[in-house]
Amino acid sequence: MVALKEKRNIWLVFLFVVLISNYSLYNTGIGVSILPAETAGVVLGSLLDFIIVMPVLMMLYKRKFSIKQAIILAASGCIAARFIIPIDHLQPFVAVTWAGFAIEGALIVIEVVFVTTLVYYMPKILADVRASALPDIFSFPQAVEKHAPKYRIIQLLCTDLLVLYYGFASWKRKERAGITLHKSSSYITFQMMMIHAIVIETIGIHWWLHEKSMVLSIILLILNVYSVLFFLADMQAVRLNPIYATNDALYLSLGLMKRTTIRFANIEKIEKDPELLKEKLSKDTIDFIARDFGEAYPQIILKMREPLEVTFMLGIKKRYNHVAIKVDQIQELKEILQQGMGNNEE
Image 1: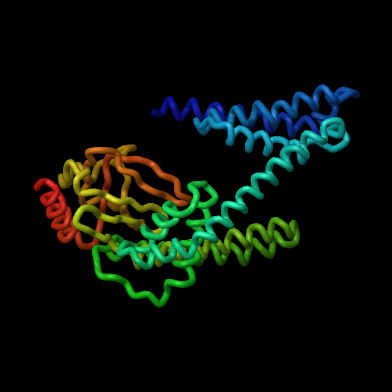
Image 2: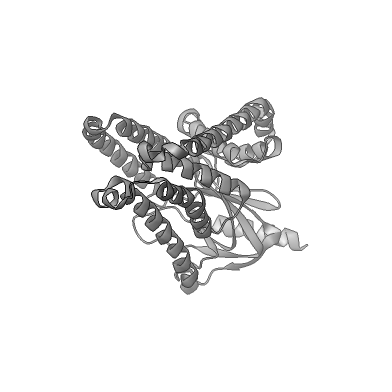
């Protein structure tokens, strides 16, 4: 595993070397001094780096290969070349860079169409959410997947809508009774500390950066405002969504960061050995443990018969063979698990 990670990092190093060397060639004194009088051949080589070499290195680093990703990365390379290579040298190939802008623009238009599609289906989505007995953090994404096209922009927008809902519209809701993950931890306190840190950093850096670059200061302000909203929404999502159990499944979430549905029939074993629980969690173990100032250990680890799908922020999904859990009412959770597993064995 370590060897594979190091091999991936090599591609990232190559990527930065290609990027920095091209930037230095056109934007430093040493680079400009070695440029020939006729730069067309050199610029063509740089464009090949931006459009072919760097996208290939990025895909090797991510270990994901697709035509769509290749087109997006190549278009991004065209745009990057437009800003890195001076226009005097780039003039013979300027149409290539505009092609990158055209492709990115077309992709944006397509994404806007998908967003419009989500708006069109929103009444049906909300109707499903109201009719569902599941917590909103589960029922809303399920309704979106049911009615709207399965595209990444839809998943991103789904996440943002949950952030807006829990950040603005959930404050009058009362906490439901149930098994919670955060009350015996410092999770809420930690979230509040992060919010205060972001606010203080925004006030200090924003005004300093405003004098240097108004555009960067505005971008930083927008990112920090969204970060504060996200931490507030995540705190509300944790507080308002205790573990929800049905006859055949356990709906487990830790705020907006991760959630999963555990079918009782898929649980092979409940690990309770105190010594094992204090060991470092393996790579194929997902933890649902609220953030704490001190060391936090799971109270139980569930071994799954088949890999369990866990959904993270932005709709990213991964599979794990074990689930580590720490809750405030551990005895109640054990009883629910034992009863659920017993019902599925009958």
